[in-house]
Amino acid sequence: MSTVRRTIDRYGLLSPEETVVVGVSGGPDSLCLLHVLNHLCGQYRIELHVAHLNHRIRASEADADAAFVARLAEEWGLPCTVGARDVPALAKEKKLSLEEAARRVRYAFLAEVAEQAGAKRIAVGHHADDQTESVLMHWLRGAGLAGLRGMLPAISLCDYRLLEGEGRQYNGQGEFNGQGEFNRQGEFDGQEPYPFTLIRPLLEATRAEIEAYCTQHSLQPRFDRSNLDTTYYRNRLRHELIPYLESYNPGIREVVRRSARVIADDYAYLRAELDRFWPQVVVSESDRVVKFDLAAWRSLPTSFQRSTLRQAIHRLRRSLRNINWIHVEDARVALLEKPAGTQVTLPQGLMLTMSYQTFTVADEGHVELPADLPLLAVDSLPLAIPGTTQLPESPWRVEARLLSRSELPPGWEDNQDPWQAFLDHDVTGSELILRRRQPGDRFQPLGLEGRQTTLREFMINVKIPAQWRHWVPVVASPQHIVWLAGWRVDERARVVESTKRVLHLRFVQSTS
Image 1: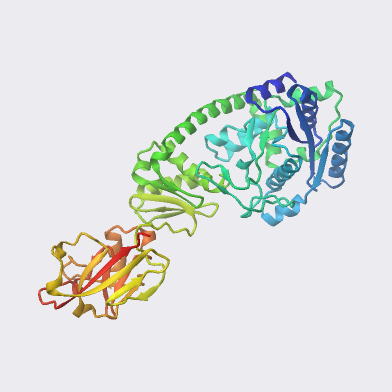
Image 2: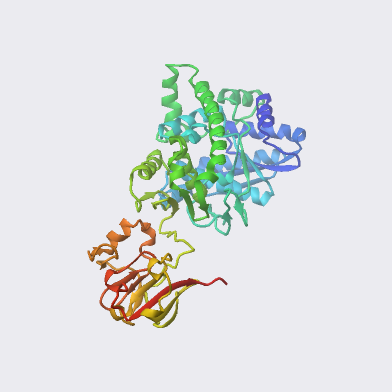
């Protein structure tokens, strides 16, 4: 009990006048946890609420476990909630391993009980030997520093990805549905779906100490035969790998845990550094996209290049599940070596997209368009010549005037506004349309001495970001392109000495 009390005090796991939901399976770990916390209720001024979930994996044995926990809670005078979920069916439906499906459903159930009980903390029975197993599992799967820290004494349940789906509010079936968004700091705005802290008071106690405690206090835990089934990954680690490692170093369990503590300290420092320079490399972020300054990101040490990418993913998805080292590394190398326009597909429906000066990590299909440019939201529309044409879904309009050669303003030849053009009306005519680019588009950019090029090649050469190219307005006559708005007039439409009538086109942004 002294070990548990020390862990509680060191990490501030309990607060007075609070209800704590205790997940109890009936095994030695959770039984020990419940017994210890029940004896500490007076000291810490807390109330307990027991929660047990029947996963429907072990048939009659699971029913007996549920009855055991309910009876025990009644004997100890503790409120208890017993639930049941068909985990095998869910695992099949969601294409998850049985272990992963059970984990997600279990935490969703505990969150539901905590919500109903008015609790903010959920205590589970993970102990020091579980920590050893977790660190080894993460290492074998190629985890980074965050995973090699192992389990933390306290963590927000928001950091757990529960069940697949758009929603996050619990619906009583093991899933969350509802509203809410995470803000720029990764905190939840709106209706908080699971504002609970998961605590692990036994994390510094070993399995042997827990079993000794149960014996000392005449506790008779239930025995779960599935813990011996080595078809489960964690069980193979526990019963095969760790004993084998102990033949090399009998103290391997503590060695692994000590390494995890060192890594946790190093990781905390690196996270503080990441938080410090995050604003220096991030241009903007929302719940759908994080935009980086490419040059600033490239100047970072390799470690922080990786961690910023992981952080962006976590801010968008609140989870790094299924994000492996190779995903992050492929993205990192692409940002260093690939040209603008490169896209890298990431798990969880995310896409990394490179521009010339920035790159984004965003929802797949998200298009990052600059708000201050007159980009075209429709395939095409006719231009009023002369007159004004309003761009759909935009504060921009096109003003068209017809001028004589003598009415040209001073300095028109040295036009510094990329969003206005002076064109030979005798060449362009008045049947002009504003449209998006089309496959096979070609034109003769002014300055190339009449040489024709594809619109695609020109856009690449002048470094128009790939995600903008579909939206850049093209002014075209029935014969050919006359102006790639914002970039270049066609050689054939330029004003020359023989020009009699000038078409002046200008994009104007409304200020209201």
